[in-house]
Image (cartoon, rainbow, N blue to C red; front, side):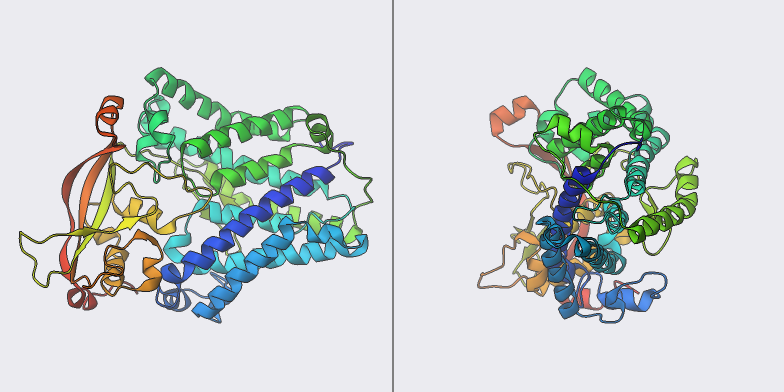
Amino acid sequence: MFHGEEFWLVRFLFQRGLALLYLLAFLVAAVQFRPLAGENGLFPLEWYAEGASFKEQPSLFYFVPSDRAIGIAAWTGVGLSALALFAVPYQLPDGYATPVSMALWATLWLLYLSFVNAGQLFYGYGWESMLLETGFLAIFLGAGLASPPAVVFLLLQWVLFRNMFGAGLIKIRGDDCWRDLSCLDYHYETQPIPNPVSWFAHHRSKLFHRLETLGNHVLELAVPFLYFAPQPAAALAGAATIGFQGWLMVTGNFAWLNALTIVLAIATFSDGILETLFPVTAPATTATPLYLEAAAVVVAVVVLALSVYPVRNMLSEQQTMNTAFDPLHLVNTYGAFGSVTRDRYELVIQGTSDERVTDDTEWETYRFRGKPTDPERRPPQIAPYHLRLDWQLWFAAMSPTPRRSPWVLRLLRRLLEEDESTRSLLAEDPFEGAEESPEHVRVLRYRYRFTTPEERAETGAWWHRERVGTYVDPVSLEELRVRRFGP
C-alpha cells in the first residue's frame, strides 16, 4: 500500500496526537501514582521492588524507590511531552531534527515504562501497554523534513489491527450476549464509569442495540483487514475506526483507550488523502536517513519475531485480554469486554466520628470523582483522563466481600488516618476540615441501575439503587492496623 505514497503529514499529525496522550498519562502519574503505588501507597513501591526482578519488570524505580523520584520522573515526562506536542524537534536544522526526535521519544517511552512496570494493580490496563508499544514505534519515525520510514506505519497498523481484531475475537468467544446481539442492552449501564450520554444510550430501543452490536462486530472483525489495503480503502477503514471510537468516547469513560486508537488510525492515511480532505500541503521532503531506515528494518524484524505469542494467543480458544509478552511491552495482545456484566454493583464507603457504633450512629459518605454514589448526581465526563482508584473500585464491587480485593482494607486505613495523599484521590472527604476525626468506617454494597425516563422525570435522579449487603462491617483504625494487606 506504500508504493508512491508520502507520510510527512501523517507523521506530523500522529506525533502530535501521541504527544498529547503522553502528556495526559504523565499528568495522571504526577497526581495519582504516589498515593496509589508510591512509598506509602495502597500498593507500596517496595512491594514492586521486593517482589520482582529488574529483568522481569524494568523500571527506574527499582533502583530509586522513592516519592521524590516518582515526582521528578512524572513532571519530566510532562515537560518532554509538551516539547513533543509543540513539535520542537521540527524547529531544529534538518540534520539534528531526527536524532533529537529519537532521543525525545525514547526518553518518554523509558519514563512511562518505569511507571507501568512499577504501578502494579493500578497500572494493569491494556491501554498502558498499547501506549508503550505505540510510543516505542514513534521513536523510529524521525522528524524535520526527512521522510519517515514507511515500514513504521505498517507496524503501527499492525498494533491497530491487533487492538481491534483481538477485541472482536474475545467478544465473540467470551459471552453469549455478543453472539445474540444483546450485550449493549446492559453495557452502557454497567460499564466502569458511565458518562452523561450513557443514560440516553442505554434507553435506546432494543433494535438500536442489536444493530449497533452487529456494527461493532463488523468494525472489529472485518474492517481491520482493510488497514493493509491500498488507498483509499485503508483510509476509509481508518475513518470508520475513528468514527467508532468517537462513539465510544461520547458514550463512556475508557481513559485514553479510544483516543489512542484514533491516533493509531491516523497511520492508515497517506499525505495524498489528507491533502484531499483538508486544506494542507506537505513540504518538500528529503530522503530518509540511512541510519533511521536501517533501525526501522531492525525494529520490524524484532516486532515480527515478538508477534508469535500475541498472535497465538489471539487465535486461541483460551484467548486472554490485555497481556504483555515481554518486559518492555513491545508487542502485546489486546481486547476489551469479553464479557459484559448484567448488574451494576457499587461500594459506598462511610465513616463516623462515634467512638462506639450503635443503631443510632450517623454515617457520612465518602464521594469519588467518577463513581455514581449519589443517585441524583449526573454521571461525569472523565475520559481521556484516567481515574485509577475509581476503576479498581468497580472491579472490587463485583465480589460481595474484599477477599479478592484486600487492598480496599488498606484504603479504609488511609481514610481513618486522614492521609492527605489518599484524600487527593477523592471528590469529597466528609471529615476534611471537620472538628472530629473518623473513628470507624464501613463499606456497603449496592446494586445500581439507571432510572427509567419516567422515574427521572419525576425525581430528577439518574440512578436507582438498592442495598444488597455489607462489604466491610464497621471497623476502627486499630483493628485495621493488625491486618496484613500485601506480600
